[in-house]
Length: 486
Image 1 (tube, rainbow, N blue to C red):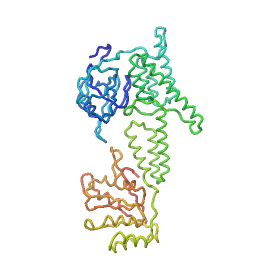
Image 2 (cartoon, rainbow, N blue to C red):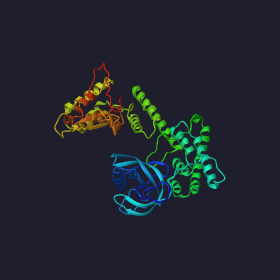
Image 3 (cartoon, rainbow, N blue to C red):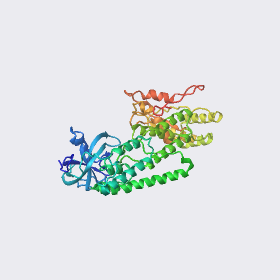
Image 4 (cartoon, rainbow, N blue to C red):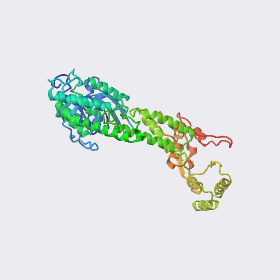
């Protein structure tokens, strides 16, 4: 154990090498771990540990390119932060990785490297004392405090001013305001520097400041710059009549990968702009009334949802899919029978019966424009031209062509789509095909229908029967996708 006094950290620490984000004592940061060294640290140390000591690791910036994880000794920053891994989450998509939630404890310096593989283990020296501080920074300055007391009081007043410019109805802001009154001056610059918007380079300067007075001097300009930026933003908004009722807020939610709690208003404004742009797309998609009603309901939920919630991404992907579908985009049919006959003759020799059937359909469409598209079934051995005939029909009509290969499909979800609650849910072959061709009246070719399978996941042939069902002329039928639910 180190001999820095007070509460001590282990003298030997496994090191988590980070390329993004800086962990400061007192802050909580979420790191994404996917490099071989860091993956081994999580699997062999954190997941197999049974004591509190095994959850304490060193977080130290690595200046090496993250794409070059070689056997050479990494270029480490001279000072790191010891922290407790309070949460470990693993995932295999899109590639195996872990997400760690780490709370910083104190600074340390590396005295010697003990091993580099399978993860980095180092002998460290504790630089901060972890004692039970009793003097909150909110208390007044006495004559005994001197310059350090004046700095801490000035810093505290600036932090209070910054919070006063933010929306106190947001839980993150209200919680930090209560925390600020009880924070000791020894931890105040680290905690505030981790929560305001600033570069990693500036955070490293605060991390490198070993004396408390130096930390206040490094963090105070960052805090002052944040306040001036918000003042300018407020002044600009007062001049704009469209933004008179807007209030300065913060991003709702916790910490994000590789970054700290963010009290910067610009990020919240960007989220608002994204949501407003998405709302404009929803209204501009010209979707049916039922679909529009569902989208507006989901959009209202999205505005109230913090980005840290898993459902945020699911709802956002759902709305993106809805606005990308061609609800009102269609191609104009070409009903010129002579041109169609010439095109069919150029593409295929003989097949007179098939060509005559296509021309009959075009002739009927000239007389009755509301006629629904028929279903043609092509039967024949491989290589006789079933797929190319479908493509020629699409060219004849002037429509987009989309082929769906159904050979070997044994899950009805491939046809109707997966439920939205599933991670990585897909909309199904039919809806995905409409999204691909970007029109609502393409020619679909369902290839190899006879090779459909059947399994415990359902019968795709039965689901396909629902898609292909043609109701009587006096009835209206709509195919309902499981993902879209419209």
